[in-house]
Length: 556
Image (cartoon, rainbow, N blue to C red; front, top):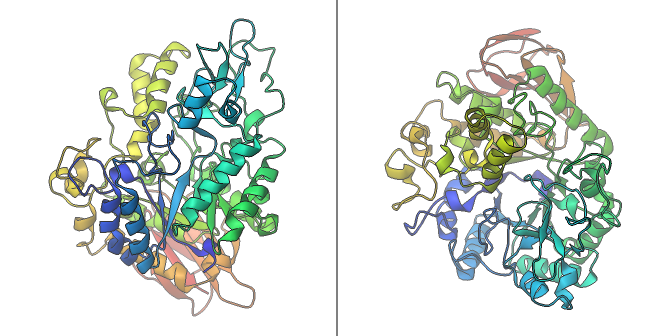
């Protein structure tokens, strides 16, 4: 199978399923749910980082690339998981973080201990200037992008938290070690990697200031996200690792990656990555400063959603690029809170509408744990926040932007990554069936009515709809490879498009993305067959009145 045909299910292991009662999800817990995932129709599972980590950024600060974190299990547990998944024809993707390590990593500790060590050049150390850091770059989580080594007086680059130390990909020895590590995991039978902030690996020559004439810290932007030479690194990575393993799937996460950039990373003839994520839907309704920018608070229209969606679909098609499509993940609020409805009148319908959208786009669909039963955000209180990004942004909103504490609390509650990291709601019992112990993060109290076990008993089961939508995608290659063409483009409530293969079938998808009834003007075809529907089947007509969040797929 071409890896682009995959149905990918993302697992945040800490919150998926706890097998031993310590309150933290683990690898045996993932293994215990493989039959459920297989029945859902999943053929690839992406595990967010499982490596040892001090958890300053919950696994994205890796202290050992070649081991399994004890809180998740053992290497034997991992190998058993890969084997059991393989029996069900499910591939495992590991989450690789090549831009930085934890400051606890042995390489970095050696670099601190001895400035003459070879490991010093594995990282980016520089002398300061004007009694401060080497340049005016701001980290992606706020504050300076530099941390001082008090022993030597030099600074080292930390583009995220101060405990995440950027690696120097100009160093050939570092690259060789990383490629060898990647082959180590591929040789254990995994299916590939999701690669974190992949476009940051190349830094600009001389590390110049951003906007040197402005006072204060500046986001480096393209000085780190779009540097010449990044594609040479990825082609080397592909040659040294990916190309040696048939059907290896690689998906890149690129900070602020633009629509014009993705084909360069993903066109097959370039031999870099299989696919990339994009952020234009995730950041829809955010201000210029990102998701914590309080000026818009996620306000956007259905037309804006459609225009972003259409633009990416059409450009990837034109330029032979490929994207991984998603509406929620471990870094974003739950999809119903962002794009659907948490109102119980519409929760089920909007969950199915969003599923239908994701499963019928050009690109590879990604499902985030729990969205298949309609999980929602939990407005955690400040003392419950675990996420460094949230805690740091809460301080910066007040200190740098002078936002009142009450408003800063409201903003962070809405935007924190903790929203998507609450335990999966397996049933309506104690701790939602996630653990017999005390969960590491509070369970959403709505688990008594919003959970997988209960959902599957409903006539209008969301889980059941996911199964049907996944099966439809696998049965109709036009939904994978077919040309995307927008329909009724200016409709303010409905998104509609066709997927068609040359000389093959042509499918029409129509979805009301709002909580109000809406008319859609469609290409009428006699004898069109309704293949899938969120509410009920109906014949195709030139004008259709859709119920709130109603969606249908027709074979024309």
